Image (cartoon, rainbow, N blue to C red; front, side):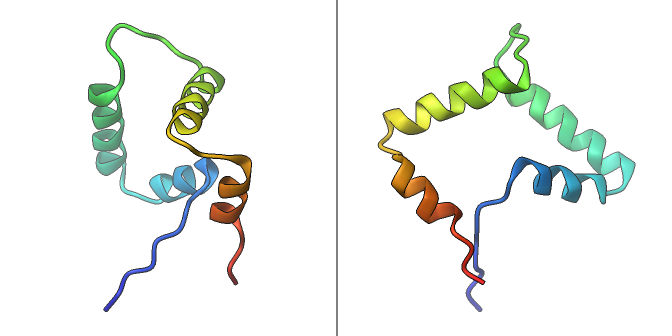
Length: 73
């Protein structure tokens, strides 16, 4: 069986996490904290800007992004 993957929005991910039991939500939060840059407080827009810059540096263009986000239904 082949598993199909597709990009999820931040809101979709958040909604999925909120459906988990509280203990699993806390585990996810702890993992995010462990894997986040140390001693650095960033707001969400700063994080998104950093992710965007990194993606562009690796060759992501607006055209590629639109293709990745296209609804295939």
